[in-house]
Image 1 (cartoon, rainbow, N blue to C red):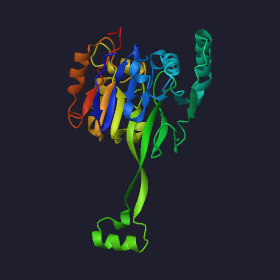
Image 2: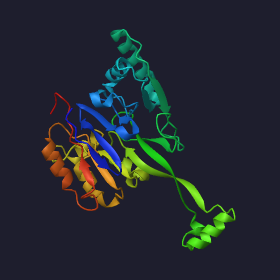
Image 3: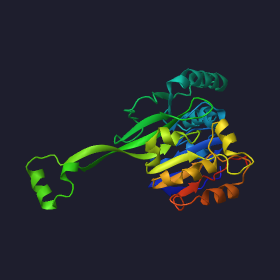
Image 4: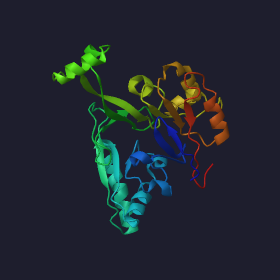
Length: 286
């Protein structure tokens, strides 16, 4: 895989995402990947894969990932998915085990997009909570938001003199409160309407979202009907994004990386300057 590594909102990110060929987006500092349509060698060392849906270009590399980790003597990987996908995923892995003649151990973690609380993953630092949400694709699909536990000054104490706050703290007054801040989100394949149904996506530090089509040969209406997002959908909503960084993925293979990058870079403020295109390529591939 040809992959361009970048640092976005303090997260190192690399990978590739090409519609119908494969999506695998790596976050090495968290030892996780979003989807695994193909399995480049770099992703084998990552412990956890968050799976959005069952299309082969998003899950087809999972058996290779599991087998390679076993061959390298690494711990069994963890695959996160919604409950409705688990039975078919298990059948897929059982077939792979039968073909390979090996155990190919893995952990499957179910996540419910209707659960507002989210889950803790043993493969992530304890300060993180993972929450799922329903994306708007042609197949049942979920996206993910990673929340980080942080502390802030309680509203009633904001604006107070620092010396007074120190006195209150010495008196045992709790002046701080904990809150969950959305640091990272991945939509998976989706129509742009997901941005309206999940407002946190527009304020997470790093948003990873698809733009599959960028020209009028495939119109915004065509993209919507297939469960995808068009560049013009984002252009119409550009003022809503308050993210620190946005990474657009899932380019159609009908476009070259240069054409896709140029289109993404044409987006106006406030996205201009803080949005990037994921330009990695699988081998062989477009």
